[in-house]
Length: 110
Length: 169
Image 1 (cartoon, rainbow over the protein chains, first blue to last red):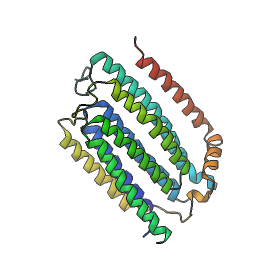
Image 2 (cartoon, rainbow over the protein chains, first blue to last red):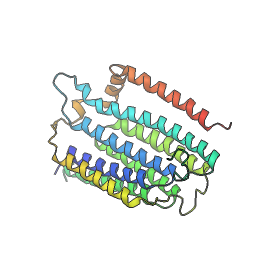
Image 3 (spheres, chains in turn blue, orange):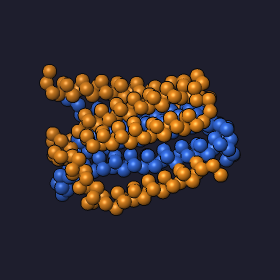
Image 4 (cartoon, each protein chain N blue to C red):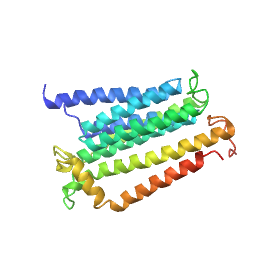
């Protein structure tokens, strides 16, 4: 039995759902961010798997088969920027309200 | 054993460890332990990239995620309080609804993935490219030059923004 594209897609679907559960069910905002990073990684796995397994259209050069990996690189860069800003926001909130629990940060809650 | 069955074995071992790491991040009761499970998860993801013959992405994964982002997380945990309490990574009161939503999402995703008949190439490498890292560099400096520069600008803006937001006023 060989490993196919579907194997990797199913794996990343499972990881994505676990990350989604973490985002919805956690109270500590750092933990929510860690779950979001897991979801980023799940998406990256799908992109790299597509780049590995999908055929390149005849009108494109062979190098375009690596488009998925380029997308994954950009996602990594954006995720790094997001993590830096989000953790700075967490520190700012913690300094003001002495808490990292999302249930206590309800200033904008209706 | 043939190469194929070795790859199959490697995939299932990596997939199992990846799911275990992900569940560890979500379920471990201490947030420091969850962050360390996240380090493990990122390492195993890098192994999955190697299996997909994306060696440059795998190296980037280790350097940026394992090296930089988890250190950032550990700093954030250290700088906020009650880091080592046994209930420092609590769930909220709606975890059952969250589990339901996650299960439904997983069901939809897996059904779509298993049903869709995607065209599959039989090439031995991605797109038939043998020197992946070199070709990636040429792509980034050629057709993707504008997004590449935009990503650099984004990182600069995020760095300045993080400093400004986190600064003591």
